[in-house]
Image 1 (spheres, rainbow, N blue to C red):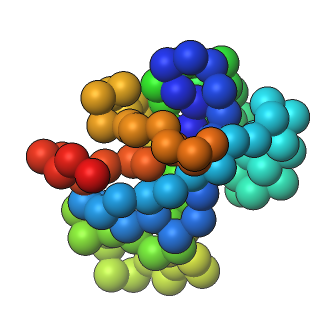
Image 2: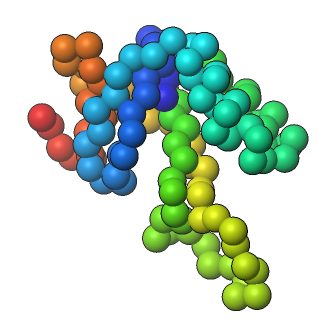
Image 3: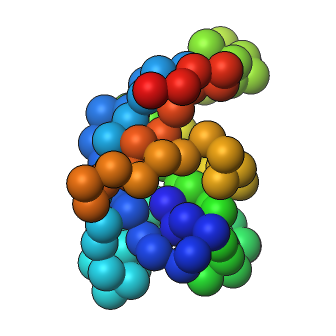
Length: 112
């Protein structure tokens, strides 16, 4: 994610509705992750749309290993090879707390 101040952050194993601890990373590290993890698995339209988020503040990009419960059902005849799901959006600064060089993402209504 990129916070409201422009710093890029990375974390693993975040859970929807829970807290996540992120460590600061460079823009180059973020771009390498995006290129190696996401770009190779999407078409040009989605890739271009995602690239427009690179320098926006307060934006997160996440890759879920399986489709979340809120994902839309598809036709049963589709044999998916993977359930990886791309999730992105804006995270309000109020949901973040910086502490000891890490960024804590808080669940809604939760204060550490």
